[in-house]
Image (cartoon, rainbow, N blue to C red; front, side, top):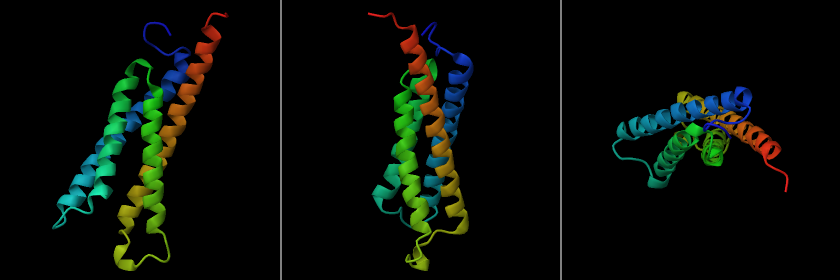
Length: 145
Protein backbone atom coordinates (compact mmCIF):
# COMPACT_ATOMS: atom_id res chain seq x y z
CA UNK A 1 0.00 0.00 0.00
CA UNK A 2 1.45 3.30 -1.06
CA UNK A 3 0.14 6.82 -0.45
CA UNK A 4 -3.02 5.40 1.14
CA UNK A 5 -4.19 3.84 -2.13
CA UNK A 6 -4.91 0.27 -3.01
CA UNK A 7 -2.23 -1.55 -4.95
CA UNK A 8 -3.49 -2.32 -8.44
CA UNK A 9 -5.60 0.83 -8.32
CA UNK A 10 -6.98 0.49 -11.82
CA UNK A 11 -9.13 -2.57 -11.10
CA UNK A 12 -9.34 -2.81 -7.31
CA UNK A 13 -9.81 0.92 -6.90
CA UNK A 14 -12.56 1.08 -9.50
CA UNK A 15 -14.38 -1.88 -7.93
CA UNK A 16 -14.07 -0.43 -4.47
CA UNK A 17 -15.10 3.03 -5.65
CA UNK A 18 -18.24 1.64 -7.28
CA UNK A 19 -19.06 -0.44 -4.19
CA UNK A 20 -18.50 2.56 -1.91
CA UNK A 21 -20.78 4.92 -3.80
CA UNK A 22 -23.42 2.22 -4.24
CA UNK A 23 -23.29 1.81 -0.43
CA UNK A 24 -23.79 5.55 0.03
CA UNK A 25 -26.76 5.63 -2.34
CA UNK A 26 -28.32 2.51 -0.80
CA UNK A 27 -27.82 3.75 2.77
CA UNK A 28 -29.42 7.12 2.15
CA UNK A 29 -32.25 5.66 0.03
CA UNK A 30 -33.03 3.00 2.63
CA UNK A 31 -33.10 5.45 5.55
CA UNK A 32 -35.29 7.92 3.65
CA UNK A 33 -37.65 5.21 2.34
CA UNK A 34 -38.03 3.59 5.76
CA UNK A 35 -38.79 6.94 7.36
CA UNK A 36 -41.31 7.93 4.67
CA UNK A 37 -43.09 4.57 4.80
CA UNK A 38 -43.38 4.64 8.57
CA UNK A 39 -44.38 8.30 8.74
CA UNK A 40 -47.20 7.63 6.26
CA UNK A 41 -48.79 5.16 8.70
CA UNK A 42 -50.72 5.94 11.87
CA UNK A 43 -48.06 4.04 13.85
CA UNK A 44 -44.55 2.94 12.99
CA UNK A 45 -44.36 -0.79 12.27
CA UNK A 46 -42.96 -3.34 14.71
CA UNK A 47 -39.62 -1.93 15.91
CA UNK A 48 -37.24 -4.75 14.86
CA UNK A 49 -38.45 -4.38 11.27
CA UNK A 50 -37.38 -0.74 10.99
CA UNK A 51 -34.42 -0.81 13.39
CA UNK A 52 -32.61 -3.32 11.16
CA UNK A 53 -33.04 -1.01 8.16
CA UNK A 54 -31.41 1.86 10.04
CA UNK A 55 -28.67 -0.51 11.25
CA UNK A 56 -28.01 -1.48 7.63
CA UNK A 57 -27.88 2.19 6.65
CA UNK A 58 -25.45 2.93 9.47
CA UNK A 59 -23.25 -0.02 8.50
CA UNK A 60 -23.18 1.01 4.85
CA UNK A 61 -22.33 4.59 5.79
CA UNK A 62 -19.58 3.36 8.12
CA UNK A 63 -18.24 1.13 5.34
CA UNK A 64 -18.33 4.03 2.89
CA UNK A 65 -16.40 6.26 5.27
CA UNK A 66 -13.86 3.70 6.49
CA UNK A 67 -12.92 2.49 3.00
CA UNK A 68 -12.07 5.94 1.65
CA UNK A 69 -8.34 5.14 1.83
CA UNK A 70 -8.67 1.55 0.62
CA UNK A 71 -8.64 0.06 4.10
CA UNK A 72 -11.31 -1.62 6.23
CA UNK A 73 -12.95 -3.22 3.19
CA UNK A 74 -14.34 -6.10 5.34
CA UNK A 75 -16.56 -3.55 7.17
CA UNK A 76 -18.19 -2.65 3.85
CA UNK A 77 -18.45 -6.33 2.94
CA UNK A 78 -20.16 -7.10 6.27
CA UNK A 79 -22.67 -4.27 5.82
CA UNK A 80 -23.52 -5.54 2.34
CA UNK A 81 -23.83 -9.11 3.65
CA UNK A 82 -26.29 -7.97 6.32
CA UNK A 83 -28.27 -5.99 3.75
CA UNK A 84 -28.31 -8.92 1.35
CA UNK A 85 -29.66 -11.28 4.01
CA UNK A 86 -32.36 -8.90 5.19
CA UNK A 87 -33.49 -7.96 1.68
CA UNK A 88 -33.47 -11.62 0.61
CA UNK A 89 -35.82 -12.48 3.48
CA UNK A 90 -38.05 -9.46 2.85
CA UNK A 91 -38.25 -10.03 -0.91
CA UNK A 92 -39.05 -13.72 -0.84
CA UNK A 93 -41.43 -13.48 2.12
CA UNK A 94 -43.59 -11.14 -0.02
CA UNK A 95 -43.67 -13.81 -2.74
CA UNK A 96 -44.81 -16.57 -0.36
CA UNK A 97 -48.02 -18.05 -1.81
CA UNK A 98 -49.21 -18.86 1.73
CA UNK A 99 -48.93 -15.23 2.86
CA UNK A 100 -52.37 -13.62 3.30
CA UNK A 101 -53.09 -10.91 0.74
CA UNK A 102 -53.44 -8.16 3.37
CA UNK A 103 -49.86 -8.79 4.54
CA UNK A 104 -48.31 -8.58 1.08
CA UNK A 105 -46.56 -5.42 0.04
CA UNK A 106 -47.67 -3.50 -3.02
CA UNK A 107 -46.01 -4.29 -6.31
CA UNK A 108 -43.91 -1.14 -6.00
CA UNK A 109 -42.63 -2.11 -2.54
CA UNK A 110 -41.70 -5.61 -3.70
CA UNK A 111 -39.96 -4.13 -6.76
CA UNK A 112 -37.96 -1.71 -4.58
CA UNK A 113 -36.98 -4.50 -2.19
CA UNK A 114 -35.85 -6.55 -5.18
CA UNK A 115 -33.83 -3.60 -6.45
CA UNK A 116 -32.18 -3.22 -3.03
CA UNK A 117 -31.50 -6.98 -3.01
CA UNK A 118 -29.77 -6.73 -6.39
CA UNK A 119 -27.79 -3.65 -5.30
CA UNK A 120 -26.68 -5.44 -2.13
CA UNK A 121 -25.55 -8.48 -4.12
CA UNK A 122 -23.64 -6.27 -6.57
CA UNK A 123 -22.05 -4.30 -3.73
CA UNK A 124 -21.02 -7.44 -1.89
CA UNK A 125 -19.54 -8.92 -5.06
CA UNK A 126 -17.70 -5.72 -5.93
CA UNK A 127 -16.30 -5.07 -2.46
CA UNK A 128 -15.27 -8.72 -2.08
CA UNK A 129 -13.52 -8.70 -5.45
CA UNK A 130 -11.70 -5.48 -4.52
CA UNK A 131 -10.65 -6.97 -1.18
CA UNK A 132 -9.40 -10.20 -2.76
CA UNK A 133 -7.39 -8.28 -5.37
CA UNK A 134 -5.94 -5.95 -2.74
CA UNK A 135 -4.98 -8.85 -0.45
CA UNK A 136 -3.42 -10.77 -3.33
CA UNK A 137 -1.39 -7.73 -4.34
CA UNK A 138 -0.36 -7.05 -0.73
CA UNK A 139 0.81 -10.62 -0.27
CA UNK A 140 2.90 -10.37 -3.45
CA UNK A 141 4.47 -7.12 -2.23
CA UNK A 142 5.16 -8.39 1.29
CA UNK A 143 8.79 -9.28 1.99
CA UNK A 144 9.53 -12.99 2.21
CA UNK A 145 10.56 -14.18 5.71
